[in-house]
Length: 251
Ligand SMILES: Cc1cc2nc3c(=O)[nH]c(=O)nc-3n(C[C@H](O)[C@H](O)[C@H](O)COP(=O)(O)OP(=O)(O)OC[C@H]3O[C@@H](n4cnc5c(N)ncnc54)[C@H](O)[C@@H]3O)c2cc1C
Image (tube, rainbow, N blue to C red; front, side, top):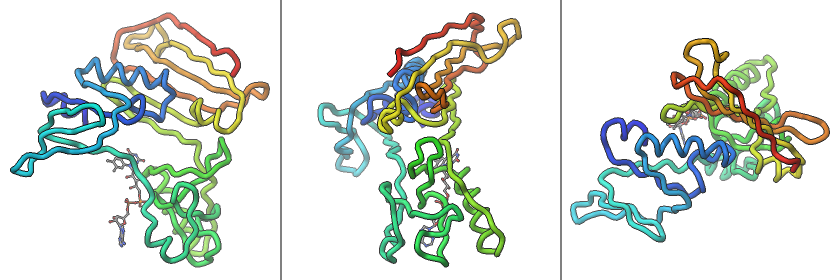
């Protein structure tokens, strides 16, 4: 929305309670997104929790307030995240997990209820990297859940084994991909890990149209098990043909 509104010539400020926009990335990769937004003319304010939307006598919005500041505004767009709406299910005694999503088995049958299946945004799914259940609201999962449930209800057999947290998106002129655990997720799991960040290009340097790309990989120490990958790249930008590498000290 910020990108679209700036493109239409509006002055745009993004207030964010977290330390950076796109907290699905590690802070060092998220910084690239932050910089791209600023470069496009979007003002970003981090660590700013919105406490009030101020309106005038005509009922129209005038400003947005945080604890410390007030930001004049003609239009306010809220993007506050997603939580499973399971009030009805909980009222019916169905089990929910730590994120408030319904708990199912691999066939998406609600645990303890033979004749109830659940899928989509209202369920928690197994994270195959951490082994824990998470809530990830994505249509790509909901679609597969629907197919699995349809098969099972129809007398066939299908399972939804879990997810690795893959997501691809575009912000300003950046293309962003992520999968697996962030550093803070790995730390929370008690995993010891190393990271490697590579500055490279989207194509071989001699090939026309190559553009810079930052790739960060996180792997478990000793086993080398890949825990997560994040990529921030630019299509159609200047060629940066040399590769640079940096490695973190073992965590
Ligand atoms: C702006 C936006 C962009 C998105 N972009 C992507 C994307 O690029 N890729 C991606 O994978 N996912 C994306 N998603 C997420 C994706 O849309 C959802 O994960 C997906 O639609 C979830 O499917 P669902 O069937 O679980 O729920 P929904 O699609 O929300 O369907 C639930 C339906 O149940 C109805 N309902 C609710 N309560 C009741 C009731 N009591 N009685 C009867 N009906 C009821 C609702 O009206 C609704 O029609 C996006 C979501 C949003 C909001």
